[in-house]
Image 1 (cartoon, rainbow, N blue to C red):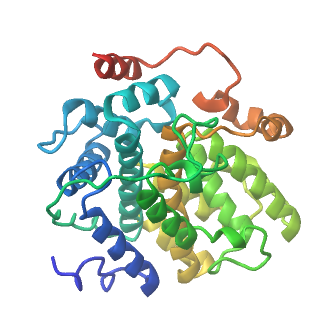
Image 2: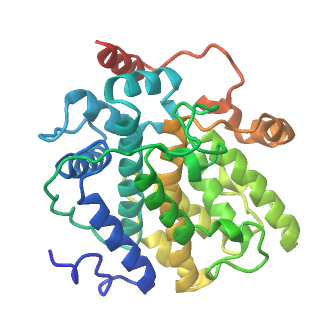
Amino acid sequence: MGGDQLFDYSGAAMPVPADLTALFKTTWEELARPGNGWTAFEKVGLAAAARQSRASGEKPSSQALSGKTVDLVHLMVNAPAEIDRELASAATDYLGVVRYVELVGWVSIVIGIDVFQQLLGLEPAPLPQPSAGKPSEVGEVSSLRMRKAWVPTTGLPLPRFALSAVPRTQRVANLILDRMYKPQDDRHSSRSIRGLSHTQLELVVSTVSYGNRCFYCTLGHLTALRAAADREGVTLQMGGIVDPDQDTGVKGGAQLVAMARSAVSPRPDPSTVTNLAREVGQPAAVTAAEVAACFMMINRIVEATGQPALTRQRERMRPLLSDLGVLEFPHAGLTTERERPGMIRRVIRKLRK
């Protein structure tokens, strides 16, 4: 498929901003290039395996990847919250840090973009034709070291640094985060974000993160949601994130939550975006779909690299987290002993052989 037809939104139910289309195209161009740990053929194979796994819920087949690598992709797609330190350690021992981090990045990126396509009623974009060539060395990365995460990073436990062992992949993820969520320097801005208030925006992020059982993002963005509602004078009922019959108190809240829940499902329902557009307008509905898709990417990056949540923030939010069942998430960190799911145990054993 030619570049003009790739990410063609002329048939979409509502307009998609041109800069988002351009971002997706440049992302696909990077996917088609040899990486720092994988050839282009293997990178596109990671994307294909991720799609197959998400569509079927079953372990995919792949001519480009080893069976052990396919196992990791399958877990990344379907059970990211179950990935733990022992699995990440076994994976980095098997693949090496660069290949593991690059795998995490590209599986997550492709899932996020695919979800956006599906929310707009479109099929996922055709994967690119891989370029020839060998992977290139990462070279020395300044300040890269083991901190509290499961892989080395260059900075704080934030999504913007989670993939920093492979700067090219981190750069792609950060461009998506800045465009589909909000730029880093807009974190404390009071202005709306592409038609959504900060309360609406954080309601989407919190709902997606809750659906993915991502403790790090659920904690952080429930905190941000509460703060945004306070600033904007919204009487917030957070139980609406869990209970569809409970009003969140947010304008268009029921439709925002329904769309976010749909994004987490294997087959996102475009009617949820159409219904949302009737409440908030088409541009804001597209923004909400962007945000939901972005955090389908971010949740996986955070969970697979073991970004640690802030203990003090968890304790401040404990009553709410308990009410919503968030303290039961695998990465809540409240127990030292937790039964590891059988599928995780099996993959660890395979990787250690």
